[in-house]
Length: 157
Image (cartoon, rainbow, N blue to C red; front, side, top):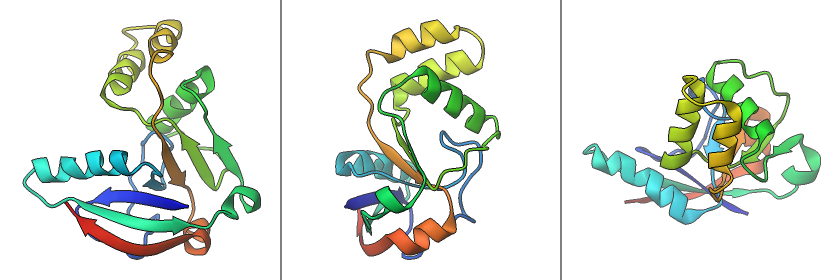
């Protein structure tokens, strides 16, 4: 399966050390199987005057049967609880790979209102039910990266 990671540099050997804390699915290496989404993320680097690089990898599909996977099919109560905990630095999930919806601008705005207690959980979930989830994959540990993720090439925007 082809997956993409947008950055301002080519990343032949991804590692967990350079991952930031308090992201949607916690610390990990984030990819997507959706090229248009990777292109959109790469544009962010270009807008800031930098260079956008789309790194292209093959994700060995045996990962789906050999590793512990958490999949969020929709923006759900469980998804909202999970990203809330992760964004607060309470990343305690014991998974190798987490797959779920990405917080686009509208989703992010709804989540921010919820995180700041301007709206309650039911209101947030009601707003999110109208959003079609995009997709991101977070590889949570170096062993999974090293075994299942293989760099192919990069492309500059």
